[in-house]
Length: 409
Ligand code: HEM
Image (cartoon, rainbow, N blue to C red):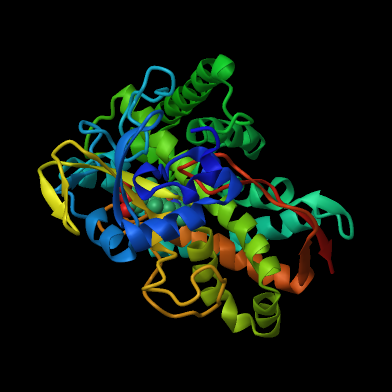
């Protein structure tokens, strides 16, 4: 297609909602609105993205997400990511829980689940607060800066460094690797010429951590949980697959919500004022930031049998894309879905998924956002957006590269 961002005007059967440019430009909202209204279970055999179904209504996405007997997330059938593996993009040979069906899924999830249990997350609160305070100390008050660089990219990576028990000085490398691993459609993050070498640097570092834990004995960190788990001996590839999930899952999503919260509140200044006036609104605000931002655009399933959805026949083996980016904006479920409305009510957003793969790190993400916003409202009640935010080109993650702001005390 010459200009994929204009596709909202195309005949419905030509709409190819997975085009990465749609997400970089923000034009996907209009495309999904049309699909929800005219063709909520939509098929396209796209020239460059291949054949896939788009599921766009809240109710359908919520229902299908956990129906693993019919819609598999398993890597053997295609996995949970938009793209099928290909020689150019398939840096990752190993598997992880997000691309497994039961019973293997439960085994892999159980290896690290204790690290995310509510008491463990609660115990992190004082550390999160201290890290937030130190990050906000670096904010150049009254001057323009990129919110992503100074704040949004920092907090999640610092917390992941704690969970992995790696030196904080190494977190910059992890950030780069995380960008490389998840944003393969974003030229600024993914350079095919150096991708393989960077990926090898990542795996070398992960194996270095593994060997260190073998030498030092078990600790309480995530790497120790993988090395010493009593469920299954992880192969080197599956260890790497799991590290990739934890690094990207824990980093990219939280940082884009931190960035998106600033963008959203500046777009809806009455909601910003509501938050300044009443701190009890912080918790519902976080829920709404996560809906409004929807940090993961979609998850993929593969049909294990012929099945019917709203009168359409999905064939065994078909790729089915569940669009959280559409379901969370379904006008049949949410009033004024494009607005940021703190305490809006309605059902829980689908940003963390639904069912057996429900996000393991949701509480950690919410804790970071709550501590950040409590501190921000105290120290910088006005973070003003002073230019256009620049989004990542990706049909998987809804991230920002730049959010230019000025902090006012
Ligand atoms: C706002 C922040 C976050 C969002 C929006 C988010 C979103 C998601 C989504 C959509 C899924 C897939 C759900 C499904 O297939 O039904 C998922 C799974 C997962 N997330 Fe998150 N995530 C966030 C933060 C985190 C954090 C901080 C971690 C910590 C490392 C994390 C770790 C995981 C893991 C391990 C899984 C796989 C669960 C499974 O397959 O059983 N996430 N997340």
